[in-house]
Length: 253
Image (cartoon, rainbow, N blue to C red; front, side):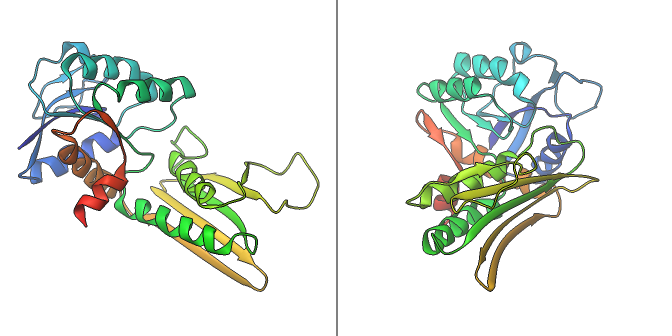
């Protein structure tokens, strides 16, 4: 049984993880951290990580980048693996995550969906094969409550494409400020926010007289919760280091 401390337990994603954990015989949430403690759960919820006294094997973070420093301090103090599922971290925060991974196992992914992580491999392969022949554009869609743009997943996909190419891409986030034709090395990244869209990411490879489009659509938040629980179980007992969904998928295969 994997005992989990859940950061952001009273948020939308946190509540989905709680429901799945109740149905999972291999994992249980033993305590939660959330500034909003009004939601009733079947485990204790604390407004600050330092107040948590429960014995746990791993921490899952589905909260807000503002909580990162307190979570890292808590994880380092108790030598607990940390699964970071939150996006929108600053460069300074990312540096601190990397530093912490030298002392504890840290899992970090901009998207917890197994399908998205497979998509990363597909777009990387396509980018390598089609380099110089096809233009690449990336479109991401999310609900109107999402704060960061572009999404962490969009940047993950863009980086996967960029790493696969010999000639590196120039990320272009808007074209309204300049009137000129598209550059050959451009990778356009476009964000759409509206309604209750859970998440949709499309990578378009546009060539002469043909288009290849690879799309992933999340129909519910459940896909992210399933991935987070898989990652949490995987991280228990791992040595210090920085991990991603790539390792989880490889073990599953």
